[in-house]
Length: 352
Ligand SMILES: NC(=O)c1ccc[n+]([C@@H]2O[C@H](COP(=O)([O-])OP(=O)(O)OC[C@H]3O[C@@H](n4cnc5c(N)ncnc54)[C@H](O)[C@@H]3O)[C@@H](O)[C@H]2O)c1
Image (cartoon, rainbow, N blue to C red; front, side):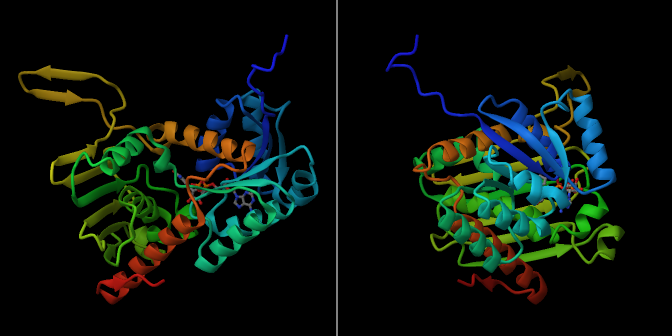
């Protein structure tokens, strides 16, 4: 029998997942593992993509509970559903703005993959609309929710290293994303560098005064789309901390995501987990299994944790969201300064 002491059971959050590509699949796994939410709709482009999503859900035994809807029926079916609480947007970035605006105006909470939008004005406008409607708009800077990154930040902030001198991050993607994705990815600074930029600023709690960035396309197909696949960025912070970010679109040896923070009293670093904890030691040397293949394995816990945080924010509107408008705008401003620096070949001041 229920008593006053029983914890209040909050209603399950019903979610529509828009875009069923790489990010959509990893969020599907988080939703399935989370008992506080259920997936009600998957929205995809009409035709082949919509049909592929439908077939996949049949294979996953989810066809009875999840309805696949083509994007042209998003307003009339998904947004018109009064039972739906939240929309999770995992389409390419150029589609985020329209889905955010429509979802907020229909009264749905929004979880959106990074970056929220391509321009700062648009990012601000999206948050203003969410603020007016008193609805959560969450930007998925997932590294903040990774247990190792989170622990490292707490320890740096707690003074374990004393004064921080420098931070160095390495992010090398695996596998190379498809050319169709890269063509509309909004470029390497906004698509990849924003994760490292956000991580460094989040750890330090400050933003750089200026940045210097250089990029180069090592692969012919990346030259052809006028983007770069190899980037080095130096960020200079008012406190004197220097940070370097080293990025590659393709690592042949697995997903490579590392960070080092050096301070007066020592160094904290995050290394890559291996795909198996198996080590062979012989007279010829030590042999480890390869690094994990890609982001769904490496950051699985972060994707699950960020979903829990999003649900917390829906269920308790007084809760402070762990990624806010200033964080999101800052990452975009810094990525834009990097783009300017790559062209001018000079350090660029951060515009306010
Ligand atoms: N946080 C992370 O670790 C992470 C990892 C990968 C991608 N992302 C982000 O996720 C977003 C999507 O990237 P991706 O790699 O999954 O791309 P993707 O190309 O693999 O998937 C995008 C999907 O959206 C569908 N789509 C396109 N336009 C649509 C529309 N108008 N309506 C509905 N569906 C539509 C496409 O058919 C495709 O299936 C990007 O913003 C990217 O920055 C984040």
